[in-house]
Length: 466
Image (tube, rainbow, N blue to C red):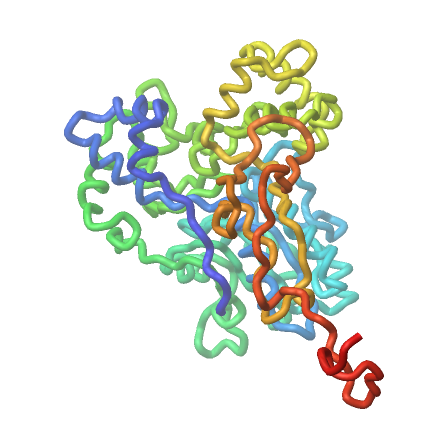
């Protein structure tokens, strides 16, 4: 299966040193282990929602054409719920509370089905499966660790007698798609689900299950995930106090290194997400905090949909300098909500950069001039346009704006630069005290040539006296 590789996000050494939340987390370790903890953070691979969504769309798009695919999102069922189908043959009703990673997968499946033109089915019931004679079942999960959740989900589907009979007859082919999984999880899932894998079986269960993942790793090969200092990282996770034994290396001792923006898997080392009276994890509750998302994406979160960008204030000042003072016009130019534009103007006013009439103060003008950051205002090319057909031998008629007029023979040295005032328009390109440059011979005016067929009654020039 070939497709574009997913781009991971990682914490740089500079980010780790500058983030106060990370420094507070590091202070819980003994001094000798803090450098190892930084190495652990550096090897984490973060997967954004957009990257995961794009990968899932590509992975599902690789499924064979010509047959209907039933898509199901893998989720962990309650201990009291041992059957996925209810009495009417419909999938079990999802609870009203959030289910973590399954919520995003469920939403992505809905989008895939709406754009598939009937190729995919969104969690269909047994009656729909029977009417359309569906044979291919796709189970989607973001990450597989020990394989308990996937095997439990399949067994809950097989708990229905009708679906179990289809499975026994070989009418059910299951395709498990997950972003990452240990290679050992495949054998564990097959061993735990119902059915026989005997060689004499016409349809053994191992022949009816297929796995597809972006990342497949070996559980015991820590060096591939944690680098050359993997042994020190393992000792760090094992020696950290305040964390229970099963949390040290994550659920199932998987010790994974992949973190999703929408969910933090429990198979990560416990020092990252465990929270109790003795330990405060970096991602408590197995969720990425807002400050960590800001470090990874560079976008401020938790402050509204239009969180301010670093150059938002400078862009506002540049707009006001050009004469845009209406709050609604500023909101349109910035592409933000009207309320956000009002808040941004109020902030600039409090800082003394704008007056109450939304005009630049002296401090605001100095701030704009001294700032070396580029704004998002369009830069128009104000040079004269001269068609190339007007120019003989492709000679340049209009000198470049950035050139000095002295280069073409002007008596005064004139250099055109970007205007520093806020007036709309531009200065004239003509100078009353400047002399016109001598045009190039290739563009100099010439007398029109006479046709040889036309009779010249005057004869050649100078042939006779007038």
